[in-house]
Amino acid sequence: MYKNYKKMTKANKKKKYYCPRCKNEKIIDFDDFIHCPKCNLDFDKEFFGVVDDENMLSRQELGGFIDVFNDEEKKNLLENEL
Ligand SMILES: [Zn+2]
Image 1: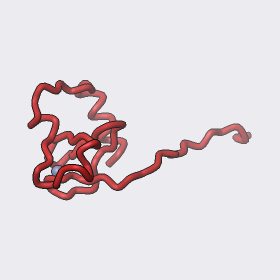
Image 2: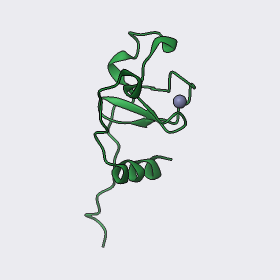
Image 3: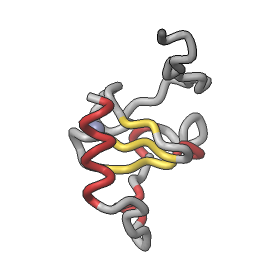
């Protein structure tokens, strides 16, 4: 009996985020930033709708940010999402 089987539900309110650099929509949606696997860049969500795409700076370009996630964790997330 699987009556108590819990379905994985994605209750996230999805706003359409995309990579401002390559317009890739297959980005990885983190809580406060998105990651583009193509460019291998992270963009803060707070810049979306505020800064023009071409003026958008990635976290890497802004500098001073260290990866919040270790490589292993990021790799797992990438594999799950794509
Ligand atoms: Zn990109």
